[in-house]
Length: 331
Image 1 (tube, rainbow, N blue to C red):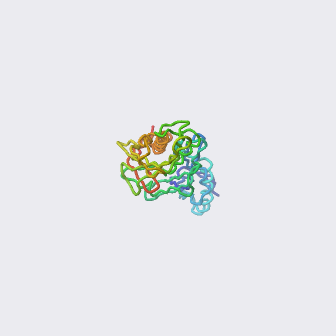
Image 2 (image 1 turned 90 degrees about the horizontal axis):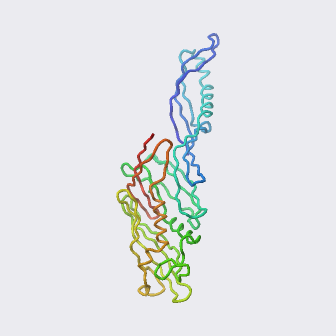
């Protein structure tokens, strides 16, 4: 993606004019620059947002509109205008440096080897906003289901920054943590983590309410399957832990308070201790990962600071969005 920049050009130039000799005359004009926006991933997981002014000479939209001094003969002015503009453009490109606009952090899932890389970039003229989409190598994450800017950029009054998330990524992040052993897979029949427990767990999915453009609360559900192995009765059940993602005085909160059996190989009433499973380690991990991912964006700008205040939540069938109001202050 490229951006247009406008500036005024001023100063003096020295011209050798036949019969008149060396002349110092004023130089005025307008500068229109076209420079690419670059997102540079760093080793620490942050991404730099850079406007690369060194590339202005590579784009046809870069131009100088010069007003050569009327102190020069008209024929001389016409003759030097085009080569002078070309020379000035070349010198500008050689002297300008990339401008570091901001640095922001990508989500931290706590999964070894997982990376986030910018995969799409768009400018939304209606909201005067930049949308950046990310791809990830998270195991099991569905391909080809990229976010778009429509939900993220439904700003309310004063809102100017948003973080949008597909909750299905959270499910795959927790599943990967279970695979890597950082989150327990085995539990007692009452949902307590146990290295030799008979109950084994897999994630079924994460559900959010759809078509909720702007609110302070969004229903949330975490589905999982448990089956027993080893000694004792063999059975399985699917359960849903439910609650909500909410905002309270600009603070994000995720509460998962209720649980129910939605399917089972035995009569649901025979399953003992189901209420305890809402506090299982994989449920807690789901909350932690979602909270850190949707937390106030971690941005840094050169020579200044950002003050963020979460303002509203939005959701559709696949996306959860946290929008904020941001104030800039500079030293």
